[in-house]
Length: 497
Image (tube, rainbow, N blue to C red; front, side, top):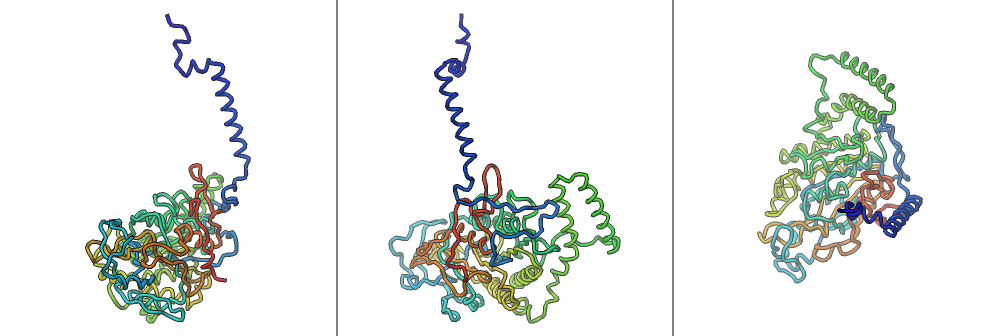
């Protein structure tokens, strides 16, 4: 016959053991004490800084909010080129590529992202010194090259991935995975809107469609939905804003007035319902957009000479449509939109240089195709902002997810992905003009001088907007999340003054 002790499990018998019980109890009490001590510690022990969470009224989520310190820029235009623009064929001049053209020097890899590598290839377009700075820029982008004295180049960028979707995610959200807030969402979460009639953050998608990571590039992740980018372009305005046929302007205005009274009365009954307040604020903004969007979309009313400068009267239909998007970007910035993200390239399924900059074969044709669309309208947009004095308070960022290799792929006509060195540039408020920071090695293969991570780049952009990247956080799933994760330093050498 079994004793009572024999009926117990091994864990139950251990609890009857006095020494084991005292040992477990002691460890448990020690754990509780340690938890209390850690909770009492300064939460800033990692970065030395406490988080700054913006005070957001759910009924007015877009209200303007103060920055952490005086900002150099009040608005930002991000021109994003999906597909990975070849830095060695555009802005990063490497004489060694001419010297070793057709050869395979020791130290270069035998295999890269898409397979075996070929030989070193000189740039497919001639480089020339530009402006007073003498910056070497290729003939692939002659219109942007003419503005080189206004640009601040970063030639030593590195990223964490060679894949396009993850690369887009990482550049725009700080993480290779999906579900994290985009740069624009973080900025508008922190600063709110500078206008009452339009969204604080607008994403202007390429005429050909979304980029590979889709709406994640301008999504809000775990931030409140109010801060997701509103996406439309010159060809496709926001849906469902037009007044239904048969409804007069007077009837429409009366309907809106009635809804406002009903919403206000409903909100009085549930004053603590933040979701309800945010929903009402969103609908009210949509109502105001019914009158503001038609005006902002009236690109045809622009002077003919401005339309010609943007390239709306020449080149392919894609170029003309992208030029309209560029003009829309300027008009949005003029109206006070805080963040405008302008895409040049699309295709969630690839395209190999046809719908974006991903040129694994025939780079001479495919990069030229993309540059014909991008170069003149983008340069005209930046020049127009400068002419109107808007660069005094607007930061312009031209970027792509990674670079391309200095050698060809085994097919002999394309360049593979290069996460270890690529180039982006900035212009306008807060950055130096005609300046180059960092450098890749002699081949443009790896960052050599002042390697700069995407974390560093995004930390610098936030800094220019008056935000400390270590302090703008959001508590999610037990972690104080931020755009730069736990990394990043402001690249102070690119800052003006």
